[in-house]
Length: 212
Image (cartoon, rainbow, N blue to C red; front, side):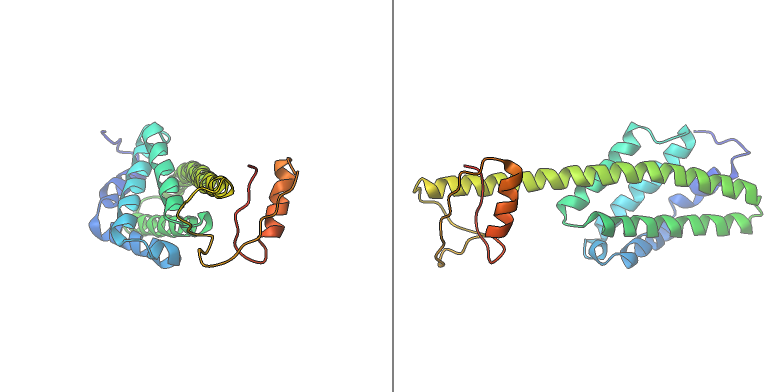
């Protein structure tokens, strides 16, 4: 897209957003802020930082984040949930990377004598865009966590049904094949009450619970 001569902040981002040195510094900032993000492969962080920088640039050019940019943010949130990174930890990394990039752009803009009003407007626009991206990332992270928890719970309930039916099944976590377990049966049918009962029954050690 042809950039107007008045949008000097956008030109700054275009010129520096794809700079490998800037990218690596942003990656280091994100990984340095969050131990759980740092535990991921460095290329994984680099891939997501690159996608988000390109997404912010596209959103600045288009006047707001489009469907493709929002989808990229959702993928990041979903990926982090599957990797076991809590939402607070990955947001720490995201905000650290964003802060580093903004500081670099402001410093470079001042060096080039870009007016403060232009820099302020650019930072404000980036904040608006990243806020929208954060909302999408958090939502996707939570949806994925719920889906994973539901899948794991369904697998445990299915194992419980098979054991109660006397089927020969491989016993794995959370059970120990060498241990002895008690079987507790109740007439509770309310899922909310059952959830509280499950918490009490498994407080002393691992077990399988469910409405069967």
